[in-house]
Image 1 (cartoon, one colour):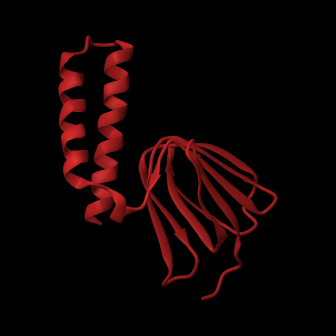
Image 2: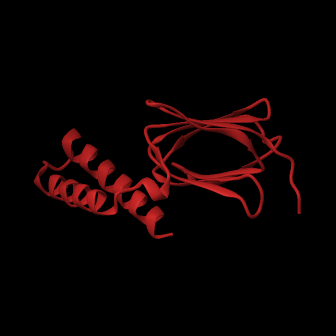
Length: 136
């Protein structure tokens, strides 16, 4: 079933990683998973690390390992502002496994309730999400 398409941009601190028309954006917010279709109501959401899927069609899906960020939907367009958006083929699995191990160790070392521990927990979540994208 053909859907209407709408423009989407994905931006990171390093620059634009995607700009095209898509039929659907699929990601995860702090309140749960979301799918955005054309003519979606205006929305601003905080994004969590996950797999970002941009459906150009049912059979053409662009995938990224998405870091923390924001999703804005307005005027029948979407803007995804994230810390990282890495194509699954560009993820060095062994490097991310090593980073995950270091982040887990940092959680164990950090004092309960400290900002250091919260930061390490966010890193664990990000690396777990990124590794999940490479195995999907």
